[in-house]
Image 1 (cartoon, rainbow, N blue to C red):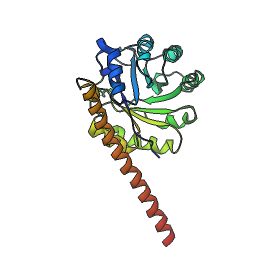
Image 2: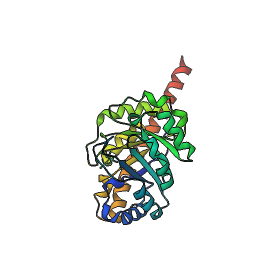
Image 3: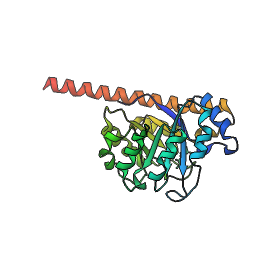
Image 4: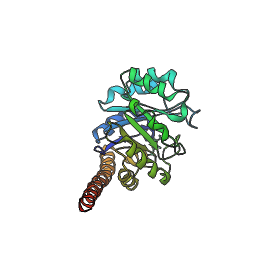
Length: 245
Ligand SMILES: O=C(CO)[C@H](O)[C@H](O)COP(=O)(O)O
């Protein structure tokens, strides 16, 4: 069953010159998590910020810091991000070399562990780490830049991972091109945690950030409820059919 929708604004789209104020603003605007995109110019073709920046902004909010590491190698840096104040640390399947080892290292530091898949990566790998993770992050754009268009090709993958997760306490997060419209699509497919950069920070101030977050949440929550009702109705129909036979 999908959990209630969480909205995680990506600070990649924030005004870096006023990063502290931007964190305070999205906190007040109703962000559930703060999504931090760490890029190394090697695993992805862009450089964003590192552990020192996360440490500097950590005191600005009590909200969960959801740290998405788009870096390779990743293992030598996991501890630095844990110490900087990350609550959830997500690593890429493609970053290697040993995904299982990276996930164990994150949990050994007392943090929640996430695994992320680029758009062209099949989901089968998730099955082998289900007991090591708290989150799966499906990239709905190729990682590296904000403001890209949502890739429809990921919708079925989201649905298959939802089925794979079942009732486990694992969040299913999506990242890239999330707007009010695509929020409906991903929540209908089973996503419960939505990262949004441009669609939140295109606002000019806290009130506009709040309106943008609320619009995405409302759209996604309605789709989630419809999805759950459809599943219940289908289960009921299956029970009725088997009773009649
Ligand atoms: O991880 C990312 C890119 O690698 C960004 O978080 C993602 O693209 C969100 O930005 P937007 O909502 O503007 O698409």
